[in-house]
Structures are given as structure tokens and as C-alpha cells.
Image 1: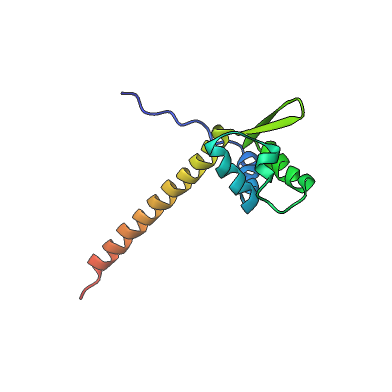
Image 2: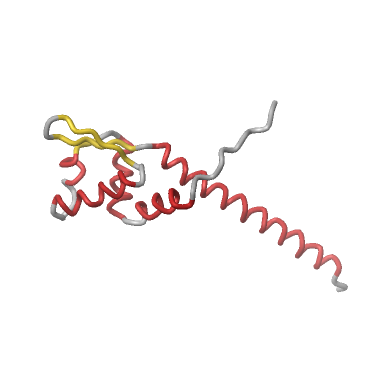
Length: 120
């Protein structure tokens, strides 16, 4: 079986935008709600105590970094989650986890070898 080919890491600006968008609790909640089903702007805004223009700014941030996309039919704008962008963030976190696990394994090996060399 051929080795798995890793796709190249996305540019830092893309990852930065995703994490910046997810840094806000309102936007994280919207993303979480959109994992269940697509929703209209008014459905998404209903639980929050903020003016609709303020909520719209949150949606612009999410759409700007590609986490959600919208379509307008008549007067209703409906949003849905773009899971590919979430996968980019997940992949970035996975690479960081692998990197740190490798570093910690090397440190563990080094400390064990130091312990074995130290006379009691």
C-alpha cells in the first residue's frame, strides 16, 4: 500500500482567519449550531441579545474565513457550515499535536538515558 500523501499546509493567513473567527464565543456557538442543520439569519440571531446588524458582523467574519456560506432566496438568507474549513483547523491542530508528541518522546528518551548514566 503506498504511503498516504499529506496535502500541503494551507497558508498561515487562512488558518489565522479560522482561529480568529473561532476565538469569539458567539461565533463558536453559531458554528456548533450549524453542525446540526443550516439556518436562516433570523433563526441564528434569535438566541442573542444583540442588534441584527451586530450579529450580521459575526456572520460576515465566519463567511469571510470560509467557515460558513450563505445563499439568499427572496428576503431570507440561509447559512450552512463549510466543513472543509473546519478540517483545515483540525489538520493544523493534528500536526501540532504530532510535533509536540515527538518532542516529548525525545525528551523522555533523553531523561531516561540520563537516569541510566547517573550512578546511584
